[in-house]
Length: 314
Image (tube, rainbow, N blue to C red; front, top):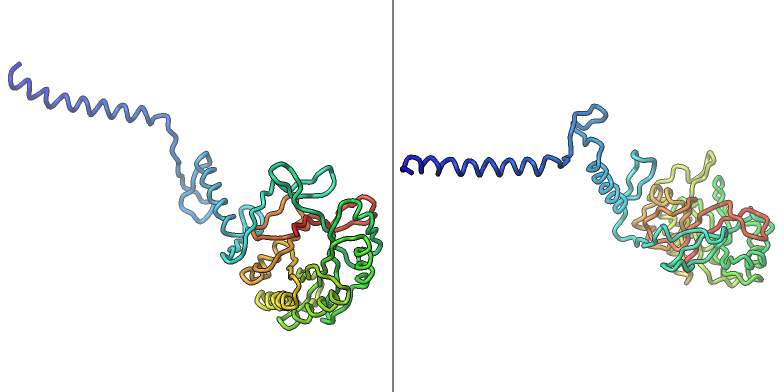
């Protein structure tokens, strides 16, 4: 082979090798699917990801992050986002571990399906004829009794008309007792006033259980808390809790899921123990709570009235 032919081979052989490698790469990637973008006029974005596996993964990751950092209120996908403060304790409850046992009560269960919560009911003057012994026999061991309320129009404090009777009945049945006050406080001072009223009642009846402030929406025109700011409402709750704590009792805050995150400053309220109201098969609330009111139409065998039922961890 002459020198000219050798030079030609030196040039051609590398070109053949490069072409072969290119063909291999093309074939290897021929069956791969990559995200495809297309123009859209559906929303304000110029581009959007076409439906498919990648879109599902990306959306799943997004909502996982969102729920880890925010409480979402509303309907998918038009949620309102409420940032979870870093100073507020979170719960580590597994939602699948909440389930109703034997068509009876909702419990929280351990890994072996053993019950590690108990049942509490809450009552007020709306439940007049309570069979306390039947409650106890059915497995209820805690009752939360309304001690009083503040009028949504006048602002006057009043005793719940069934408080005395409920306390006597619950004591005789051997139930653990906590008391709650239905608040319409509009500032810190009124929160203190409501707490002092509840503390006096607890001392009078020798009660040592938690003292709870109930803060929620009043569906009535002219309610004194109707246009209350988040700051003022939070001040009232803090005033109540600080007063209860100062008197040697344990304060709790009761409200429903959305009220907690939309109408209270959780960076201040969430440092206290919480009692969550959310009527659902499973709770959806990131903060640590000691009680979950899961229905207001609960049935207790032997008790012929509807009751609020609660999964209770205290």
